Image (tube, rainbow, N blue to C red; front, side, top):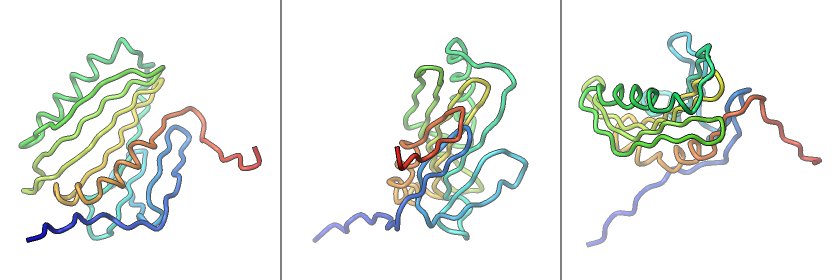
Length: 170
């Protein structure tokens, strides 16, 4: 008896999403959605009929400069908030400082509207900004299917002060 091969998403290519304060890569055919509230940022997904399988960015200006001294308090608040989600189970967590950027990261499952969802969240603090990037699957299976795409977006994520440009003539 053979085991079925794991299916992977097929992509046509990637595009570089560039904002003044952050950037990342996603498939060229993912759809852009709007936040249902007044948040600053972006929401993308592969299927217009699945609002729960998405890669999103939420940006807030905190109005105060964040420093490495704030890492412990920010981490405590973030991880406690995740743990308070219904049926939350944190698989991995990390906190670090790289230069002037503080980063919190968690991969976890939780229950939403009677359905188990799986997330990967990276929160960056840079100067006065909090930039939260979330990769979420409507189900753990959908998360696992889209993980190669989520990985690409998360690992190419950058925070900066100016919108990056492409200088092809160098």
